[in-house]
Image (cartoon, rainbow, N blue to C red):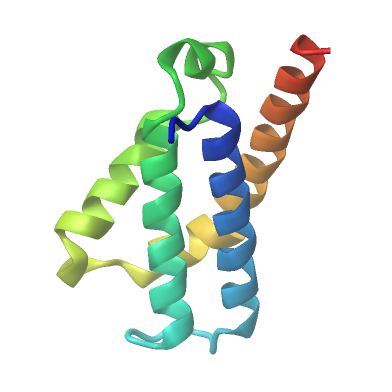
Length: 116
């Protein structure tokens, strides 16, 4: 089954919301390996992978989104899992994901407006 940009945007939103809920439940300061931290890391990995599937022409329309940093974080979380910085995970989930959620919702709105 071929997936389109909406599918990947929906994946991003679902995993942002899941990470935010895990963050709310997590004991502070974050401790590894708690289930909540592991879930947040997993969600960040999925978000990064989904971002890699957003077409470049779409990414160019929204230059304020740090596409490369999001994808790069995914790579670090996958390939250097033993050195995960929990402070960065916390800051990302608490501060960056809400911004990304707003931007991805805007992308979906723009796509829906184009196809009316």
